[in-house]
Amino acid sequence: MHTVPDQPALSRLFRMQWEEAQGQYVLLYPEGMVKLSRSAAEILKRCDGRRTVPAIVGELEQAFRCGGLHGDVIDFLRVAGARGWII
Image (cartoon, rainbow, N blue to C red):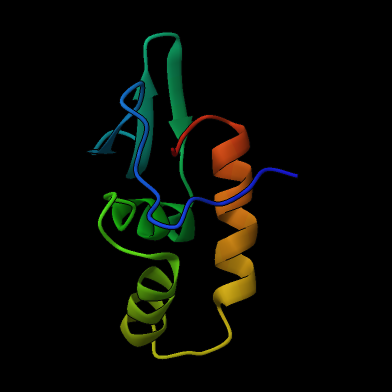
């Protein structure tokens, strides 16, 4: 299982941007593009290498007025780390 960094950051191999034609955020990399769900984009937007995982979770819970997101965020960050999206 991939470990989650304390302060995750988007890997330099990827660039996240809004694609108007797709109507969604995407991760661009030399070999192609990954379409992101809204929740994935919201998490990755906050992976700046400065915010801690608890801070990211707190911001998301506040932004979406809900609780209990820690497990889902950790699960996503593990997948994102395994795919090389975050460091």
